[in-house]
Amino acid sequence: MLTALDLPTLVLNRGWTPVHVTAVRHALTLVYTDRAAIVCPDSYQPYTFEEWIKRGVHNGNPRIRAVRFELEAPEVIVLRGYEKVPPRGVVFNRRNLLRRDDYTCQYCGKRVAPERWTIDHVVPLSRGGRTDWNNCVLACHRCNGRKADLTPHEARMRLLKMPAQPRWSPRYAIYARENRPVSWDKFLPRSESAGWEAGLRR
Image (tube, rainbow, N blue to C red; front, side):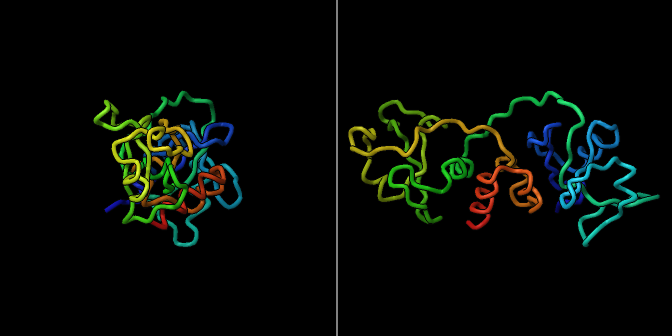
């Protein structure tokens, strides 16, 4: 069971662009050492560690209790400087492939129901195709069966877009998937927010 210290916090750079997702415990360390400020999702006001304690806990949000004070678990923080954030690759797995392809068959363009998900190898395994970001796409059962052991050209089927490794975004953060605060939508591009909502409905 997750504690308040284990919940995810969205990290923004100084330009208020999402760059990372971290646990509340690490987010508070960044704020306490003055390397970041806590952002109030309602007012967008940044707070120091001491100011956040004085602000108190609102609306029954998750809280962290210490001996002399308690504070609300921050959902968003903003870095005070352009700290170097190591580039992150998105792990190749079924769930992330579904997110990349937006739960849509990459041949016919139809939304794929959970029981109809399949992964198609653009270049079949029998032809030396690999199981990776650049050769796998989401396909419905009908299109996957039609393509069979052929290339898209041979099957006369056109891909909606060429498969490629996606750039990292908060939607791929492993431990944020089931615990993403709704307030994050205010800091994510509209397409990202829609993607989260679509994923949560499945």
